[in-house]
Image (cartoon, rainbow, N blue to C red; front, side):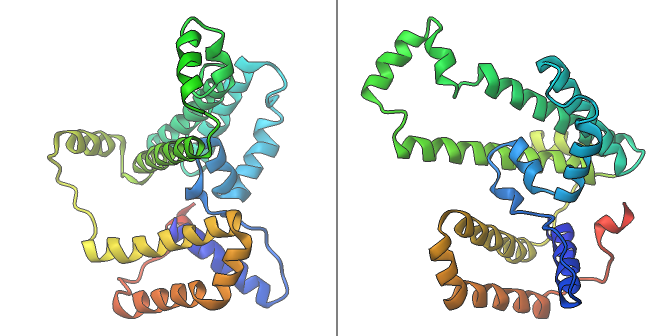
Length: 253
């Protein structure tokens, strides 16, 4: 995210200095509470192109639920191949396509959160009895559901990134096997880098959340404390841990 969104923001900022206005390409994607929302926030130029030139021409959601699920899978499969003619990209796109289709199917009829559906079923009596003493419309309950959905979406997206970043299919299998067994030869970055770079990304999304949900509060913070703090963190990271010179990951696509 920092690599791709970072150079997208650099390009947008440089263009604005010369009087050009480019559209936003990333809209705080890790605030998403569903895969569908993630793809509305992540790489918006590509997802918009896939929607306009593949999904809609294939029929979109106008030809029934079954065709919609197939279209979602095909679009994401081809979106994976857009990154390169390799099995790992095909797998990454396919898994996102399956996730989008499953999510659309689940939220349309069979979701555990679709209370109207379950109330019509035999378990509905028990649910009705429970809900009479526990208000499912209570703000606290809604917040809890949102947090659960956010945690699930974040971990699903993060797990699928491994299929994108690993060198081949065998490495993907080896990584997940090692992760499940607790024995792996893969080594991550130093904890220092994880903490500081992770903090910067988290603060960026916290700022995004404030902008979306607490606009007045966020504007107040931008003038007083949050933006200077973010700038200070960025300068500190650059001066203390610049890293080895290397190109942007997405320059290869």
